[in-house]
Amino acid sequence: MSRAKALVDASILAVWTALRPSSPWRIVPIRSLGPHHRGRIARHLLSLGPQDRYLRFGYAAQDAQIQLYVDGLNFERDEVFGIYDRKLTLLAVAHLAYDDQEPECAELGVSVLEKVRGRGYGALLFGRCAMQARNQNVPTLLIHALSENVAMLTIARNAGARVQRDGAESEAYLQLPQASLNSRLTEIVQEQWARADYRFKLQARQIRYPRPIATTGTMPPPLCQTPIPRAPAKKKTNGLFYKNWPNSSTPGRTPPTS
Ligand SMILES: CC(C)(COP(=O)(O)OP(=O)(O)OC[C@H]1O[C@@H](n2cnc3c(N)ncnc32)[C@H](O)[C@@H]1OP(=O)(O)O)[C@@H](O)C(=O)NCCC(=O)NCCS
Image (tube, rainbow, N blue to C red; front, side, top):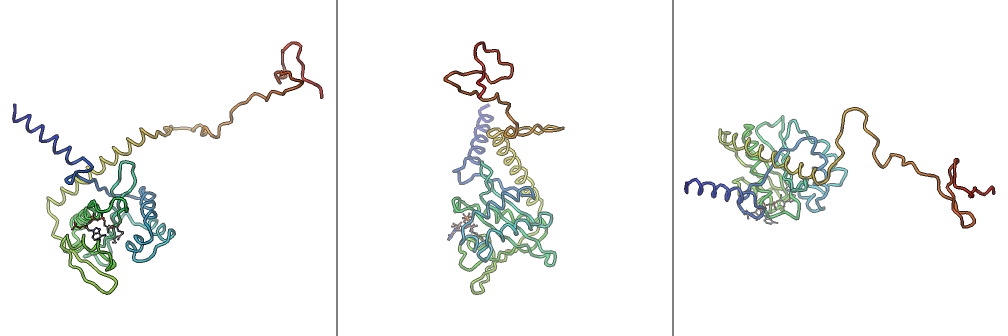
């Protein structure tokens, strides 16, 4: 009995430790993103400052160029991963791009919002993408970064990548091991957990900010467009009020003729 209680206590502690936002051992849900996340991906990238845009894209990307990049994301070929906060703001995004011409290499681009940097999100997304590429039987992960991008190159080096510097630009190559049952199962479990977390946040948001439920058939016009029937305005004459209705029955009070 006491062993069972100890087991339950340990499980509660483990779940609490994993979910507590401040815990260093917490599980951060990283979910794969699809075409319906384009708007949020765009908002995430557009909120990056000029320096971050320069580091992320290798040039000072303007809003229109970022929008073009997001519109052109090929979700059927590539993988995009994100970390959402409880308000469903994308805190971090990683784009794992495959090249049909070079099937032995997948290229990674990452960005993390400034306010949540240094929490390990960049490294976690790197690890998630490395596992994904490995499970797709891609042998090498490539990171193309500016040589001044210490943070990104540190993440790559920590993961065991070989960094080649070529002037202002650097390339990091990470050799990936072959996929295993463990890596495939881990991917499935992580994805399911992240999707459940996303659904939970979405429902919490819908409870907080409910929307009118769509029904089949013709929807009534929005409230703001529905004309509100109004009674004709009352007129004030000689200090007396009268009801301005055609069949006014107020005795002794008739509308003035002029
Ligand atoms: C690069 C970037 C993704 C890192 O995200 P992050 O979540 O802050 O990174 P992490 O918290 O996972 O840090 C990982 C490592 O980098 C180190 N690091 C982070 N920022 C650093 C900085 N400014 N200078 C030096 N090292 C830094 C951390 O110390 C950590 O190393 P450690 O584990 O040995 O301590 C983020 O800074 C970013 O979005 N930059 C702008 C876009 C960009 O440069 N993208 C990369 C182009 S592909």
